[in-house]
Length: 411
Image 1: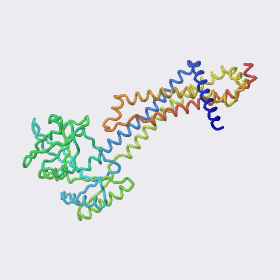
Image 2: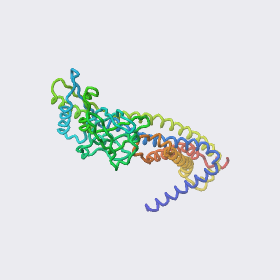
Image 3: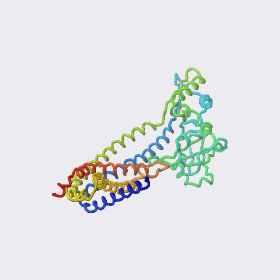
Image 4: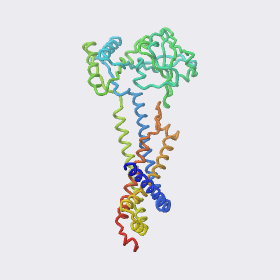
């Protein structure tokens, strides 16, 4: 019995859809303009949702590259009288604190400069001093080579990870050949380039990363006074980041003694970016929804006119046994089938727009892992088209059901 009921239900559904499609072909001139509006609105709504997903990935990666993953705590120290803090003691206090609390990802992050001897002359290059976990904490992707490893910490020749501008300056050599540069100082030091990170379009000067311990050995006298003490970062669980960061800072302060203040604060931008993106999506999505409703209103008007011209046809169907439910479903399905067809076209337009190389490059600029077109966006577009079709067909369907057989035959 259940099998027969399902079979009849599917047969009625297919018949209603086929009948609705036939009626749309007859009245296509009337509904075409409204369906164009619905299709454009669905394309806009789908594109907004899809672009929002890709933009969210872009913002997340960019914010993690700059401020670290959620939740990255920055820990810095200063003295009450402005005197220079012993960098070795500061580093020791940080290492002991993160070991005590079992922090797996922690790194120094400081800035200094280093003279590099290029083929065309010497130049002062900005240096970021880091530890091995820094790349994972900041989602750093390399163009060539590899990031620092534990073996690089013990090599005699310092390892460098440089940006593309630096790499271009030395002729873009194959890193498998272990290219070197000379770092002049109290004595010349040969350093090995092991990796290359991408440069932003606005970056015109070479820059590089060095492991903190190796950079300290090459630091010029007075570098600590010029650039200040190094800062530290710890990637902590978001739900306990504030409390754990405060404990690490307190432990470091207690170990460094009176006169040294240590503070911690969360430096990643994940929450702020998510809120900003959600606001933009709501605004643009609201505009697309408004356009979709306007298209639905036009479709309602045309459907009402079409129903009034078919009163005699509806009356004849009723005399041959068509139930009110069948008439209601058939009239409503005409709008649903029309808007779903427009929705499919709209979703296809959105895919072509978003996955266009120009658009994709603009939205996902700086993203290492560009996501595919979100299937959720396509479902949202089709669901919106179906809902609009159902709403647009509701009033005409009610009008069709209220048609009396005797009045319809006299029409």
